[in-house]
Length: 490
Ligand SMILES: *[C@@H]1O[C@H](CO)[C@@H](O)[C@H](O)[C@H]1NC(C)=O
Ligand SMILES: *[C@@H]1O[C@H](CO)[C@@H](O)[C@H](O)[C@H]1NC(C)=O
Ligand SMILES: *[C@@H]1O[C@H](CO)[C@@H](O)[C@H](O)[C@H]1NC(C)=O
Ligand SMILES: *[C@@H]1O[C@H](CO)[C@@H](O)[C@H](O)[C@H]1NC(C)=O
Picture (spheres, helix red, strand yellow):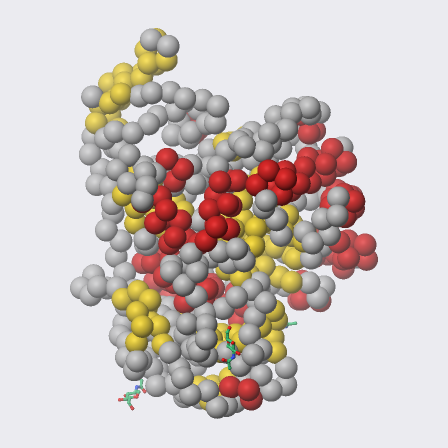
């Protein structure tokens, strides 16, 4: 596929697409460098159930996520640097439970990163702490009072990745959706460099565009040490100050939407429009794969679902194929054209090139109601039937082979077409319905710990068999590391 100039057209809707009226060219220079489409494992424990899948299902799921030219073909894998704390859907273990402790074999993120690399040696790896063990703040839940300790802790994780698993970490973040500290960020850069890890880039601050952007603009040293400004759920928009910094801009966490037809639409829209509207050159999905019980917070908000290791059942949801429209025809290091934008009657188009003459075009015409993301609020917009013509110019003037892939998310009456190879572009209106994989049914459960009854006669909606774990009152469903409990259901 890579040998031919490629032309990938995705997700068209509402009528015939006979391209007219838009010019795609590299004349006058290119746009920004593309950094890849990625997904997050963790924050927290979102891949927990995947680990226990039987073969060959587990390998197939990993193929759908990471194998090039196969499924989502992800270009970035971002993982939680476990912090011994409940970090959304469970807990991930730290590599340093206490100051003298170091162990780089806990949890499953090492395993996951190796499986990703095995399939795609070029995949970029990113790490980010959601929480820190208590000793980091000497008992306070605050990692910045002893920034040297925190920097040493994070850099140890990066060194351990290389030393014990031969994994090169490409990007490291500060503290997920929490305050950052300028002194700490500078010290992190200094510590990375001290250990000859100058190749590792710093993403900050995995929260909003501000205040990090303001700080960068008023501190030349901070400007130097930060490589990427990463914002979460930016709603396809950035701020002028972020552009002014000249830094790479990422949606370093985005999507987080139920992976049904609307979720697929959300993902298609933001993958294009994060660049078109907001100059963002990477979009990272929270999360990678919904491998946690769907009753937990943000259930089913992964690119696909694999939450039944006991049966091996998994669902390759539409976001996998939406991702493929970009990832199977680009690489990090390609460049967006400047000539990207919105279609006259709704929708957007982007185009990327490897600067060797290959061109990839991705068009989406998601309608408002079928592309709402969980956040932020989406102002109402209209998409209507239209014909559009694209004029290829500059280096692409003479492109003759245009290959076309197409997806439509289905209505109640039609089936979805996902990532189909086409010759003529003929598409029609689409939505897509997820067949809910787990019909609820009541089961009567009881629990014992060391023979002592903990609960009995509890009616649960399912699963009708599986595992249980005991946690804090607000996270009864969560699994905890270093803790095994057997549960019987009658
Ligand atoms: C940012 O995006 C806007 C809107 O597409 C565009 O006009 C502008 O040239 C971009 N700026 C940079 C520096 O990429
Ligand atoms: C496209 O990509 C292939 C392989 O990635 C490369 O060999 C070729 O030179 C590129 N350009 C064109 C016009 O095919
Ligand atoms: C969308 O279309 C409807 C019907 O044509 C119109 O009433 C409405 O103002 C439009 N909304 C926007 C945001 O353009
Ligand atoms: C698009 O082009 C086709 C073929 O020329 C035409 O039949 C159709 O009416 C056009 N649709 C719109 C919305 O202009």
